[in-house]
Length: 133
Image (cartoon, rainbow, N blue to C red; front, side, top):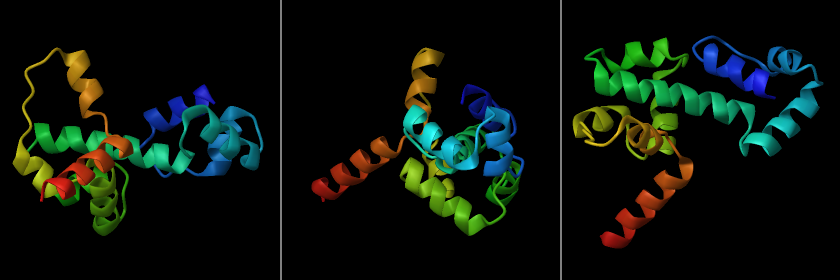
C-alpha cells in the first residue's frame, strides 16, 4: 500500500487508475481499494484528489498563474470539478483562497501540518461559520 501511495504522490498530475495502482501494490483491484481505505482512512481516488488540491493550494499561494492553468497542471481536466473539489476539501473556492493570502509566521513543520487539506477541518470551519451567523 505504501508503494501505491508513493506512486500517487509522485504522479498525482498524471491520469492514474485503480488497475495500475493495484499492480504497483501487487494485489487485486478490489483488495487494493479495501486495503487502501482501511490503511489510509480514505479511498485511493479521494487521496489522489486531496493530493492534487494540496499542490494547487501551494501554487495558488506562491505563484500568480491563473486558476485554470493550475487546475490542469495538478491533474484535473475540468475547472468545475477542480473548483468543487477544492471547495469541498479546503472550505473556500480557489479564487477566494488566493485572495485570502494566508501568511503564517510559524515553523515550516507546523505550517505544513496546518495547511494540509482536511475534510474534517473544512466541515468544522463550515459549522462554526454557520453557528456564528
